Length: 274
Ligand SMILES: [Zn+2]
Image 1 (cartoon, rainbow, N blue to C red):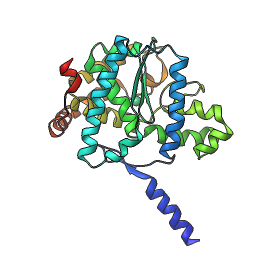
Image 2 (image 1 turned 30 degrees about the vertical axis):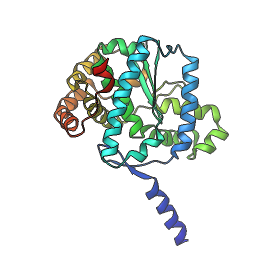
Image 3 (image 1 turned 45 degrees about the vertical axis):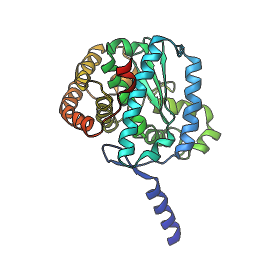
């Protein structure tokens, strides 16, 4: 019996990892390969089912470039901290969906969607980098994994993803979209926790600053988001922290973001040459 406990303990310790930048310890209950394969197939389905702009549309080119800048920043930080092995589990992709929805998301494994509605609200590239930094941070910090395991338990009464897939395939596919903040197909929107949102804000701000974008744009952008108000779509507005609190947090973190940018110089590839 004791050996069983030891094995369980070993498994829990193995599954326990640390979030980059914040150092928060977390349990990743779903194997990354399993959640990624579900995530990647659902992402492709989402792109096919929606009005996805072609790769050479100006919006797509812009979002891909900002995304690549952010990925450079991620790589510099992870390499400098001996964490580059973790990045093997990411296969970054950036797409734009034509929609009035003020929303954006990044699915587990680094699959990003920006809606044209939120790009319009962003108004400038720095604010777009705020949004994308935030969404990428959700994926880097494996928030989808944490949420997915909670939701599987709460809604399907299951804790293993492969069992959930085989027994409730449709519900499981919908859950991963919801876990990524991609939509509320199941009717009930489970909010991202404050903890996850604040963590994504913080990591996202560091990344966009390291990538050469202006962190002071984060505050007015979230103010614009706050003004959009009623009738808003679920994920990005109502479940995120209140705009004033968020602005205060971000203002407080800007000096630290600039320190990161100095400490981890990122090659300013495409931005300056373009
Ligand atoms: Zn978020």
